[in-house]
Image (cartoon, rainbow, N blue to C red; front, side, top):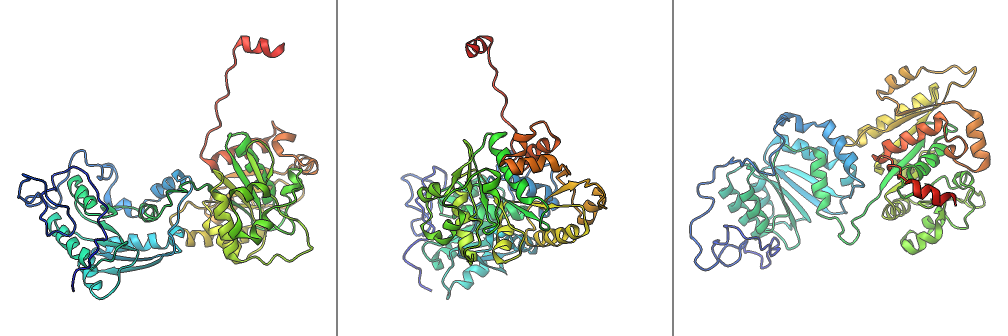
Length: 480
């Protein structure tokens, strides 16, 4: 096979290192510097040489086997991510040398952030990739694993460069935790170098990070509220949590009411905007930051509202793609986006539930809520194996005269501890609803207001700002 004229890995990396003495016939390397030594820097390189200050070493206190199923690491990583990027609609080929690596990459490929990509995983490692692309065009992303020593790894990469199309990104998985090898791979144009053991979520972040848009790097965190059945108070909690995120935690947020015919966000905030989320869904391709500002209502200094039309004069036949496009654009406008989902099951509600960064399921302590909540939680756990489980909120606990499932038994049946338990308080919630106010405005010292603030803090992973200290002179001037 004749070499292709363009070098797909030449990114003109100009790091100063000892590899400038590469021969001129190397398709990966620039011309050698004058007076450079002729010896191969990898001639005496052990295959597993490690440095005491090697940034690629895993933490010493964690065993290698634990990284293949690091539930605590995955949850911490998901919580640390402010908002995750997703893989575009590309083709990805992965060639693994070890079955353990293939198992981790299979779990990564099943992640919700990778669902738009077409991923194929094969065994054989780097040599299989070279053989495959002799008569086949390379895809957008190629992931290859090689457990050979550094010198042989570079030789195989040279062969891959000869059959690789321009524009293809290459991620290498190797066995040597060596900064010298890493620099040489970067100089040759490799997009990323990974060393096992690594978790599926780490692989997902690397793959999606290769295609992050530098012109729009910001992605807000999407939080979806869904009721296990109708009338459990999911909308009320979604509105109050969004208000608490902005008022108590001093962070901008957008509340989106997706219950188009019966949404109550406008009533709860005493707003009656002329435009709202229905207008955005009707023209998703035209939605930009300017149009978005016109369609949203301001409910405070930091909270914006995409209200539902709450009218039955029209049918709302909106495609799944429109919901996906609109919610993705809204996420680029605020650090937090709270979605108030209606109690119905359709293709678009399923899509939003599985694509949200956080999912809050609101239920009451009865049998119907228990059954529905279990179905939803089981679905989410299967579809999102690398994410933290949904948050469960038990609302309206302690209704007089109503038989209830004990909280402990409810959580045990779902294998999930409730994040919040709200006691039944008809007067407080009824007054807030009729006045178009939030719980913190009607009863700022109530247990419900404190619980909502705690839930907002858990979801946002932020602490409330410290109160500003005022001097005695400032108080005197204020009194005047």
